[in-house]
Length: 324
Ligand SMILES: O=C(O)CCC(=O)C(=O)O
Ligand SMILES: [Fe+2]
Image (cartoon, rainbow, N blue to C red; front, side, top):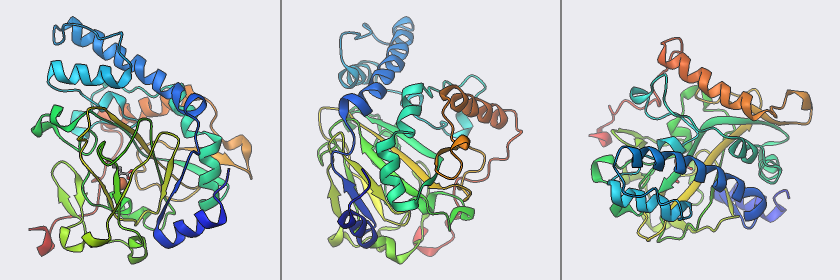
């Protein structure tokens, strides 16, 4: 299903729109949850062998199992769940990357690509600025280990966290939960219509990349965007957003992926993307999950061996007085 005219108008006016029930839990989302249950299973076997947990908690479903492990071991490492690299300083030749076929299938999901096509047209590139966030209840994440992947995310625009070469790229953010994302669970917050003002000043942040100073956030205009599995948020690259802390007793498990028209800069050249849909040249689409996985292994090897030039992750130097 493409976006309706009114949804498209809402996107254009507000800078974001939620397509409700665009994905089916059993057909579109469950395969990824199953794949992630296997990743968590391997993780729990290793922690058990290392005597960091007294049980592998194999009888629990994904969310409860993640929480049980976080509670007992004191920290759940969420980088193995991501569809990106851990911070580059931590990247090694043997860094675990779990880029599986179900996840690849979701990046190519036709329902998602139809929504994306409504906004950026039918020549669609899967931009590698992408994350999976598995957020256990905030009190289970040690303060010094908190970052935007396992805890709250500060105010930013996605355009502000890519390189300048992507400033004119029509990068579209697609955010959706695999578990309930109510306010209590730490859903997103947005500033409607903020995309119209273009890119704002960001300041470098030690754990959160780059953040917009609070002086620029019109707090009275902020709205929360609670979502349920199946709902899909489409967000403009200059829409101001952040997320709430997970104050619930459950996990908050979400994907944020990005697409841009084929041929435009992704903002992270050294990471591999792929052609997800091309009506002009269908044979250029990537259909092979192994090839996708291999492309990330190759990028990891290039970075670790120094063959790839990894520029700074963003453009902000903190020189502005509001960054002091
Ligand atoms: O899920 C989050 O906490 C933040 C997501 C985000 O910033 C994004 O999807 O661009
Ligand atoms: Fe973002």
